[in-house]
Length: 82
Image 1 (cartoon, one colour):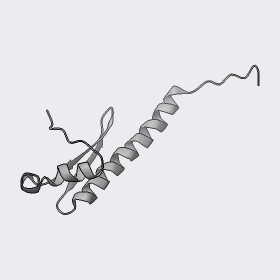
Image 2 (cartoon, one colour; image 1 turned 135 degrees about the vertical axis):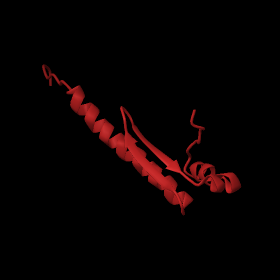
Image 3 (cartoon, helix red, strand yellow; image 1 turned 30 degrees about the vertical axis):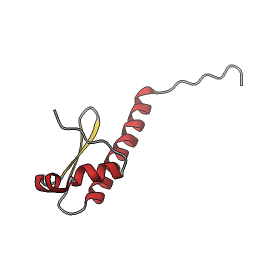
């Protein structure tokens, strides 16, 4: 295969990877919400990066650590928003 040249279209590759990453982030957010159950809000959004927020009522997190426990069950880490 001498003389074969491959040139990647970086814009197309970027869009493909971004779409797949966004799907993965959204699936993880939904899995976390499913693990918690009950009154959970999932916010899916994209700025320059894929992102998702999972919110539980304060009393559920304060009383039994619902979000923290569910995240640990999925192998995720919870960090305070700064």
